[in-house]
Image (tube, rainbow, N blue to C red; front, side):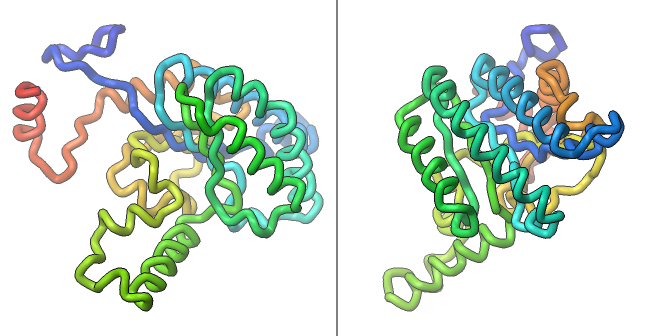
Length: 255
């Protein structure tokens, strides 16, 4: 493949529209350096800035980052408290920067368990950046794929009881409309850093046809070159969506 993203057949290999990332390895990064886990989380924030900058520069439409899962509440209380403080401080610093760079900020997940000040700051960030168009940065907080599907099922059940939906109306396209990511394209590329090879209850419905990429690189060390390498791997893959290779090639040539 050439540097401009064109393969030998002459077909353009586009960047993914939507990249979703599990940012794993902050704590281990710090422990390897005999530092507190808090230092690893702070280093992870710096890595986020670099990846957001890359995506905005390279016309990625959506970047979704798994910042805090439904299961992360099980961590030691002091680490959870530190994460909340870091989250609040980061939002305070970054919202204006995101707005200046035409980046839209979105949050998905159940916010009800967060401190009220943090919920207010999240709402402020969404409101301030809602009209921006360069990149949509989605932060998944207190999010889990099981939660997302359950809240969608609850909405559908409520409409069934109200008579505004029938059983015959329910199909995958309808269910998509009730998920937390309803207004976004499904992820094209999923990345998990830190060496684990699982999706850990992240975007379970949405990842059905996503290309998966796992790397041993710990999140604070995952830089723009690392992301470019992941995207290059994505570009070498044939996405068939149930079709044969011959069908995909024929459709690509006809386009």
